Image (cartoon, rainbow, N blue to C red; front, side, top):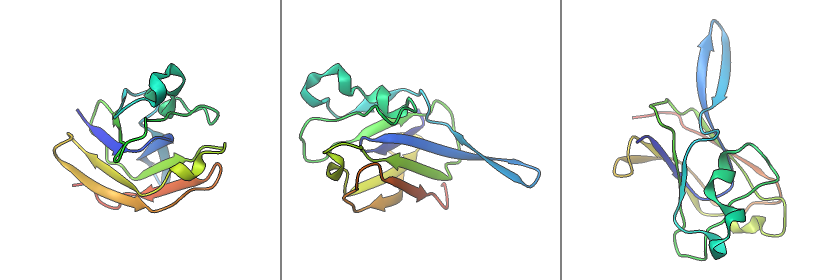
Length: 134
């Protein structure tokens, strides 16, 4: 399993394909399997798959817990260059804060790609650049 670990929001994980002198970013997280640490109110409106469906109007949410997490199984090995997270556009955007962005080949071998202290504002784009992949 090749995973990314972070907290809920709309996520784009970008991998660079070099085509001559043109860099093309690909969202390798799109429609990939997502696991949440919990589900808010056990309500299917907040399932993890909504974080990788590309729709800014959708969202996912965990239950109230000390250290919520979200894992995306990319299904293959990628060199991750950038992680983008888009905050909610409603009342609850301030809930996205103190986020560690981790990448790795399994949940026992992850390294921290970046950190966001926050909190976010409505619809804010957070970009974390992974300078090296072990």
